[in-house]
Length: 521
Ligand code: ADP
Image (cartoon, rainbow, N blue to C red; front, side, top):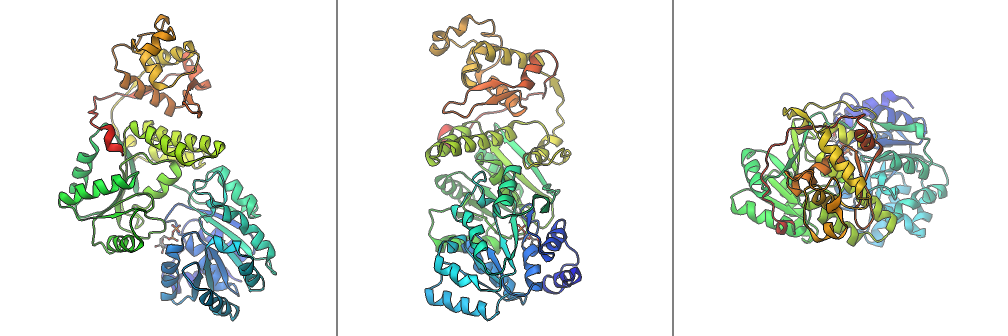
C-alpha cells in the first residue's frame, strides 16, 4: 500500500495539495498496520487521518464517535465528495439497523460511524464480529480516560469489542485534548505503543488570547460586539439563564443574535445552529452544549462571559475561532466570584471524591490562567504537556507593555504571614490578617497579635486577595482541594522567603470592579 495513493486521494476527494502537520505520520502508521494515537488541536484535521486510510484499506472502517447529532452531517459530507459512508445510531429503527449492517456485509461502505453505546449490545457485537473491518477510528478518544474532562464508561468497552473481532483491525485514536495522563490512558486502554503517538504543536498561531478583569461585562460585550459588527462570534455563558439574559440584552440593542442551550428543544437548537452556520446571525450566545464538531471556519472571536471550568474545555471552545487561519480573538471575562460558582457546580454535580478533587484542581489551573502575567498561549501549551513553549507575542499579556516591578517584599509579607497562621487558611482570611481586619474570626484566632498583622494595611482586602491569586498562578503558593481551599507555601515560595528568588509583577492599574454577585446566576 503506497503512500502515493493517500496523496492522490487527498487531492481527488478533498481537493487539498498537501498534508498538514501530523496527518502524514498518522496515516503512515495506519497503513503500516500500527496502532496510533493522534493528538491535534481542534481544527487540526484529524478526520482525514482515518478517512483517507478508509479509502485505501479493503473493507469498512469503523468510526466510533460520541457525537450522534453530527454523524448524519459527517456522513452526508463524505457522500457528497463521493465516499460511501453510513451510520448506525439510536435514530434508526431495528429494521434500518439490520438493513445497514447487511449493506456493510456486502461491502457497500468504506466507513461506518457508530456511537460507543452501541458496543454495549452483545447482539450488535455479534454482527460486527465477522465483518471485514481493517481499521477502527476512535474519535474524541479522551472520553476513555477517567482523568479526562469528558469520561464516558462505554469507551472502556472499546478494547473488548475489538478483541472479539475475527480479524484484528488497526486502531487509530484521535483527540484534541490530551494531557500526558490522558495520553497514557488512551495508549494503555487501546493497546497503542506510546511511541506511536503523533502530537502536533498545539499552538494556534492566528489566535490571540486575553483575559479581561475588573470591567463591567455587559458593557464590554456591548462595545466589543458593536466594534466587530461585521464579524461572526460565539459568547459562552455558564448557565442557561445567563444565556437567555445575554440573548435578550443584545437583541434589545439591535444585535443579530442566536442562542443555544440544553434547555431548548431539538428543533429550535438545530434551527439556531443552522442560522449561525449560514451567517444569518452574527453572534451565538451559548452554553458549552454548543459547538462540538461545528465546522464554521470564519468565527472571528470566542468570548467566555464567565470563567470556564477547566483548560481542556476552554481550549476546545476557544479553538473554534479562526479555523480558516485568519486572525481571531479568544477572551475570558474574569471575575473572582466565578470561582465560587464553578466550585459550587463541581461540588453539586461530582459525587466521587477523587473526581471532585481532580475537577477542583483543574478549575484552579483555569484560575491560574486568568492570573498569570506570562504568555497565555504558552500557559496553555505547557498545560498540555509541551516542554518549553515560546512566548506567542500576540496574547494580551505579551502585548501588555506595562513595566514589571519588584514585589518581592510584598510577596514575603504574604508568605510569612501564611506560615505564621499555620498554613491552614484560605485567601480571604490571609488577606484580612495582612490588612489588619478586626473581623471576629481574626481576633478569635488571636491573629491580631502576629507580627504580620496589618503589614499591608494600606491595601484593600480585594487587592491583597488578587495579589495572592497572582502568587498562586506563579506557583509560590499551592491550593489544597478539600472542602475549604487552604493555602500552603510551595518550595518556590520558600525560596522567595529565603531571598533566593525575586517576584516581579506588572504595575497595577486601578480597575473598576462593577460586577455584581447577582449577575452570576
Ligand atoms: P478536527 O477534527 O481536528 O477538529 P477537521 O478534521 O474537522 O479537524 O478539519 C478541520 C478543517 O481543516 C476542515 O475544514 C478540513 O477540511 C480542513 N483540512 C483538513 N486537512 C487539511 C489539509 N491537509 N489541507 C487543507 N485543509 C485541511
